[in-house]
Amino acid sequence: MASRKPASAPSGEPQLQVNVSVEDLEVGEGQRDETNLLERRIPAIATPLSWKNPRSNIQKLAATFWSFLILGMADSYYIVLLPELQEYYKKSHLAVSLLFLSPVAGFITTALLTDFIHQYLGRRGGAMVACTLQLVACIAAGTHPPFYGLIPIFALLGLSGGIKVPSWNSFVGSLERSNELLGLLNGFYALGATLMPPMARALIDCGFQWHLVYYILVFLVFTEGVFSVHAFIRETAAVYRVSAMPPAAPVAIELQPLPAAGRKPANAQDAASRTLSLTAQCLKEKVVLICGASLLLCLGSQAALGGWVTKYISEVRHGSDQTSLHVATGFWAGITLGRMSLGFVTPYLFKTEMHSAIIYVSAALVLEFLFWFVSNIVSAAIVIGIMGFFLGPLYPCAVVCICRMSPSHMRIVAIGICAAIGAVGAYTLPLAVGAVAESEGIVVVQAALGTCLLFCGLVWFFNVIHDKGRS
Image 1 (cartoon, rainbow, N blue to C red):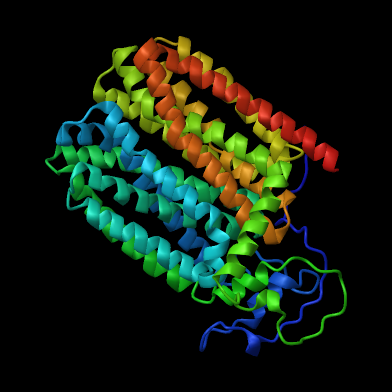
Image 2 (image 1 turned 135 degrees about the horizontal axis):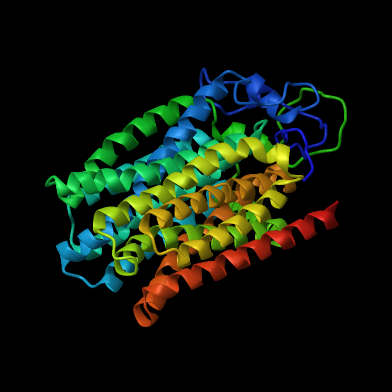
């Protein structure tokens, strides 16, 4: 393994001409931020963006961490919610499972439209819309509506996540030491996913109805909205359009009126055409397709294992419900620790993030087979926790690869596409594994997950080959 210094923020942008007049920007009264714009567009002159430069990035980074923590809590509540909905609405396991397809539809919709949304609203407006959608959904879910009323409610939750994930990942991915920071960002998501199931189960066991837990999320989402909007108060649509301008050839800097690329789109059709054009360009980029495929398999495997391990421990290892929940919590704790820690050592141990991903997937695959054959519950819990540790950094690795290998003006669209593909895996693969388990028995779940991890490793291997070809 080769040793190298930590990677800086992706800097595929050449030195370029910046024709910017801050007076010409539509950033609102009292919200003009010339320094922020120039730092984004003049890498040769301005100090590179980092977590502490400019100082406002400290607050922005904290807001993204808090947002992902709450997003992880909301998403992981489905694990506890599934049996509760079965009992409350007297529905079959299949009917309730199909209900959870509505969030992925919402997530894919907004993830693919993130660039369009940001052209009109910027990151500040995107955060406001996302938190409002999540707030409305949590309030509505708290009223325990009829069963089919949950379909649009869960779809709203998906719409909210589809805005947040590409926006916050692309922002953090543009900073120096993005590998470490993206690991922390997605580690907070895993931390929320670790904390929520045992907390929710404890509340329900104490007499809370399942729908009352959503009022806790209402409070948390409200604080998130206030924090995020305040942190990104200057990240308006005009600022986003300037930062998303395609790079130009390096020439002298000349301050002139802002070109049309930085102005507000003439109409919705212009903005939609730009988004469709960028989406088409991204779909032609092999790195986007390869990273999307890896996320589909990786997130699908994580979600399937995290969701089905409780039933596996209960039926195959004959553990109690409490023991099964502890094993699942240990798995998500491993993912959290892996995301938050391995990002700091990966740049020193591996040539690229793709090489590290191959090693991590290989380690997880070996541990998967150990978990399959270990009969002792304590040993199985330790093995699955370590497996989560190695699976954790795969998502940040994919985002780092996208940020490093795709042009900056396509970054948020590329991340949105990959996040949408990953969401398909995260929501549908557990259903597919469940269908296999219903027909063939829960024991075959491990074989199915091992196969998914094997293909995930092969996808990363092809990504390394593609990167060598680019070099």
